[in-house]
Length: 191
Ligand code: GRF
Image 1 (cartoon, rainbow, N blue to C red):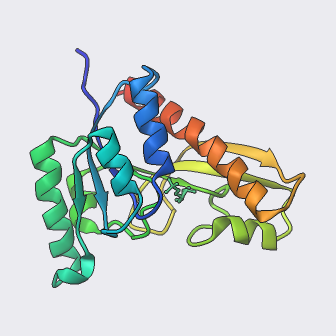
Image 2 (spheres, protein in one colour):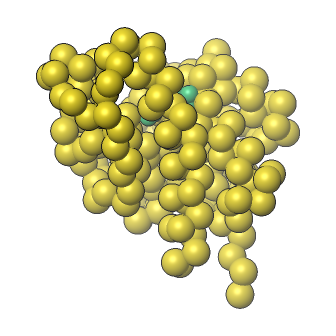
Image 3 (cartoon, rainbow, N blue to C red):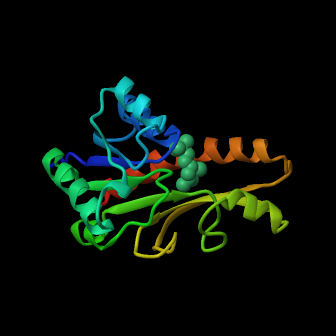
């Protein structure tokens, strides 16, 4: 039986990875349906992309809730009402808490701009450059309670011939926009 692979994308910023996933679905490269965009930043550019793509969006500020659990419970209500089966983190700048981890076991994935387990957390590209590495890369992994610590699903590496920060960021994004939809497609087809 064909599953629908209903996905919710979590993002805090520009949402270029949301866009890449949306485009891959539209171009028939990813068999999935984008049912929701979740953001913790009501002014995030990803909301404009969601509106242009006709995808439902939920913007909730964690500071408006008494606890992280309450914040995640509010998200969970919307995830359930949209029938989301997978949570796809793309530049979502928060740790996922027990409420969502328990509701979506092995169904939450993230993309991170380093070759994990090296350089988890913020500014992974800056960390890679500061460490003087000759290679940089991108990792897609399952999400657990830690910061960028879950089991690795896919990685891609490139040589840092040019160490200019903007050039490296552009190279990372190019890789991410191809690797994330392709990895999701593989993941969904083995379910
Ligand atoms: C990406 O580099 C991703 O690896 C990191 O945050 C960035 C999000 O970019 N987790 P965008 O918002 O998808 O453009």
